[in-house]
Image: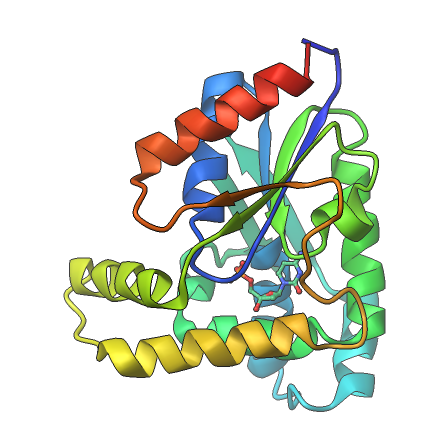
Length: 224
Ligand code: DC
């Protein structure tokens, strides 16, 4: 395999990006970088500081001295906000919605994209998000666009919530997913879209192991 290479994984919410990317990172011994967690942390930080998520100027200004640390680990990634481990706190539906709002701001994207590019400079990475193949790492050796039907993504989300002992209505979750897709695909800056040179993998009806195997085959073919 090449000394340093990058795998970009993009796709809508609930397409299985992070679960699959984490496993591939482990199997290939490369870094896993979850860029969604960074947008989630920015939204979470704004709320914690009493800044309205809709206030673009204030949210963007907050970033200049925001103490956010991303620490890739063997089994995923930890993220710290002002010394506090917020890795789990940012996994809520609420934090996802907040992330989607702040992710539309040019100043926020500029700052986070720079950070993401720096992280991929010295190590081989598999990075997941919405704009990795199109904006963050357009030179990535492997570009994958993971998709799944909204119905399937909603079912997966309900399953995850049930596993945490929480009840959720499938139709409500599906509507939330469709709303987030709409927001992420139609914003002015770096909207979610499939890069022309990405390989599309539709994971509807596939289990995690099958998706991991499919992606590993794509990666090993492209990175020799
Ligand atoms: O992948 P996720 O659900 O953790 O992402 C949360 C939100 O952050 C998502 O709605 C869109 C935004 N996001 C983005 O705009 N660009 C990225 N590279 C990653 C996430």
